[in-house]
Length: 320
Image 1 (cartoon, rainbow, N blue to C red):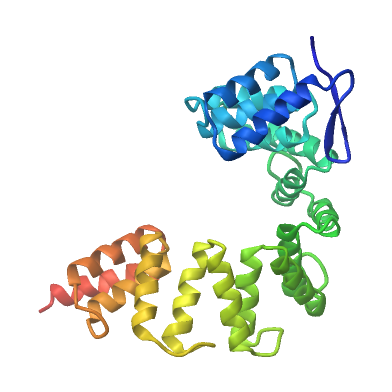
Image 2: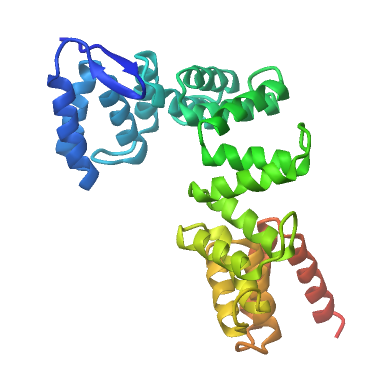
C-alpha cells in the first residue's frame, strides 16, 4: 500500500492510516541513540512504500554511512525521490548534490531549481542557499534585489544565519542602505540564536570599539562562548586575548598553547602564529624545523604572510 502524506506547518501527517508514521517514529527514536542495520531496514521498508520522511532518512543513511555502507549515488536517488514526493528537507539535500556533484554530475541550474522548490515550501536552508544563488548568479540570472528579499524573509522568520548575513549588509552598506544600529541589534539576535560567527563578529567589534562601545570583557566572553560551541575559528582570537590581555589576564604561555591547537586544526593564521613562536624560541623551546613545517602548511592554505616568512628564511639561510 502506498502511503500518502501532506505537509502542513512543518509536520507530516498520514492521510489514510498511522501505521507508517508509528513505525517511522519507533525507528527514529532508536536511531536517535545510535544507527544500526535494524533502524536502516525499517526506514528502507517504509521508503519502498513511498513514505517521504523514510525515503529521506534512507538518503541520509547512504550519505553518512549510518547503518549501511556509504553510497553517494544511492543517497542522491533517495533525495531525488523524496523531493519528488514533496518532502521539503529533501529539496535542500538534492540541491547540495547537484551543487557539489555528490552522486550525480554538477549542475548549477538543477541545484537552483531544487533550492527554489525548497524555498517555496519554507525550507529555511533552501531559502538561504537560493539567496546565495540569486546573488551570485549561480544557475540563474543574477538578481541581487530578489536575493535580498529571500534573505530578509529568513530574517523575519528568525533564522540566525540569515540575520548574520543581513546584519553585515546593513553594517557595511552592501547593496542596501547602511544602518549600523539595526545591524548591531541583528548581530546580537543572531548570536543569541546560537550563531557562532555572529558571536565572533561581535567579539571583534567590542574588542576594537567598531560600531559599539569598546568592551574587552564582553569581547572575551563572546569569543569564549563561540569556542565552547565548537567553532574552531575562535581559537586565534581567543589566543590573541591571552597574548595581549584583551579582557583577561595576559598569559603568553596559554596563548601559545591555544595557537598550537589552532595550528593542529589547520587554521592558517594559527599555523603562522605558532610557527613564529617556535622560530623565535623565547616563550617555548626553539624548533626551527617545526617552524618551517607550520610556515609551509600556512602558506599552502593561502596565508600570504607565511609565504613572505618562508622567503625571508630562505634568503637568510642562503646569504650567510
